[in-house]
Amino acid sequence: MNPPTSQADHLASWQLRLGAMDANAEELQHLAPGRDKLETVLTGAQAAFQTQSSATAAKQEASRELEARIAEGRLVMAFLNAGLREHYGKESEKLKEFGLQPFRGRQPKPAKPEPPPPPLPEDVR
Image (tube, rainbow, N blue to C red; front, side):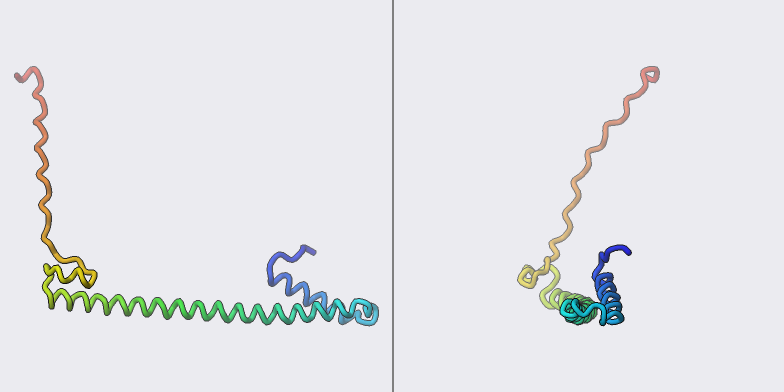
């Protein structure tokens, strides 16, 4: 039998061992204190596993709730941004106070110099 590697493997191994020890309790009376301790550890580990599972589910639910709130907040921010631009004007420097960029017009693109015409072949000259 392979040694347990995951937490679930350990719990399954402990349950198997406790079942076998219960079936052979008369022969293994001298190991009863260790068996009782393993049973206590197993019970605690199962409770911790349940707590962990509940916490994982709660974390997933909280993540979904957070995503929904963020989506709702983005819509509200878009509404408020439009309202602020409408109220102050899209070019007003007052928008910077609200964390918005005022429209300052487009910068003209620098004119590209025309490339020199290709040299003519020598036989055409």
